[in-house]
Amino acid sequence: MPALSDTPDLSVVVVTHNGRDLALDTLRSARGAVRRVAAEWLVVDSGSSDDTADAVERELSDVLVLRQPNIGFAAANNVALARARGRYVLLLNPDVTVAEGTLDDLVEALDRRPAVGAASVVHRATDGSLQPSARRFPSPLRELVEALHLSRLRPVRRLGLVDAVDADGARERSVDWLVGAFLAVRREALDQVGGLDERFFLYSEEKDWCFRIKAAGWDVRHLPVMTIVHHCGGYDRPELRAQLTYSKLLFAQKHLGPVRRVGYRGALGFKHLLRLGAFAPVAARPRARTRLRGELAALRLVLGAGDPPMHRKEHLARP
Figure 1 (cartoon, one colour):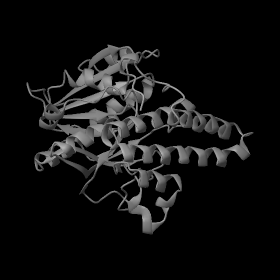
Figure 2 (figure 1 turned 60 degrees about the vertical axis):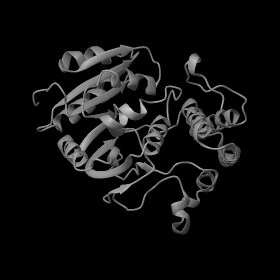
Figure 3 (figure 1 turned 120 degrees about the vertical axis):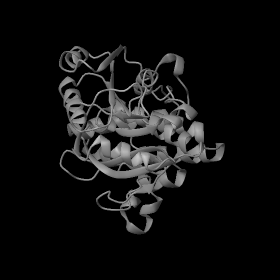
Figure 4 (figure 1 turned 90 degrees about the vertical axis):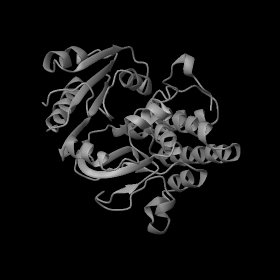
């Protein structure tokens, strides 16, 4: 590893909550993708019960491990961002490995693009398929397109939420927002807009961050200088599906006007109603039954009939 300067080129932030072995794989892989740049490593362990924090300290003595209760993904990242000293910060999920390229390539690309405030790279799933990581900001129409699965049709693809303009992610371009599994942010942009909004306990925090970065005049950019593998688990657990919907509503409350908020809530509710209708006939199957519970919990949130499954009481908002 290169010697660490007083001002590192890159501060890599990993937030963990159990998943010790996968988190260690992530750190090993990312550290192996450093050649010349000076990087510092910060891990925020959010109340793991599987020895994650101790295991990281035993194996990687130069990693700063910050132990916290489970205060939420955004708040945990902010704990590390307050300590980060790099010219760039990289939020790195503890289920990501590097497949191609180096963090040097990322830093060099950002150095050549001073207008870029936030960037990400090519994402692939464990099976090698492309995971489109660029997204469009939500609107009632876009959410309706997703509800009806119309984004699969080429003529209306650009009306959907996923910004997938090429089959392999190889085209560099400006985008609305980027998935936070691997998200690099320039120090000047961070200083200007601040950290993540801690009201987003989980999900949509990176969408909100990119929105604020773009509003401050920075470019948000897909940079295909690296390829990472995101071994993500999806939203199979009912509470995760409900949390995702809650975070979408919170984003809408922050950034959409009153009329568009109503339309957006309606489109979300319509989507969950459609999913309930699709899965009800096969409810005897365990996976379908789990999905039904998730869709029902999400619909209750849209209707204002419940609290999000994950939140900090002092940050609880009711979109």
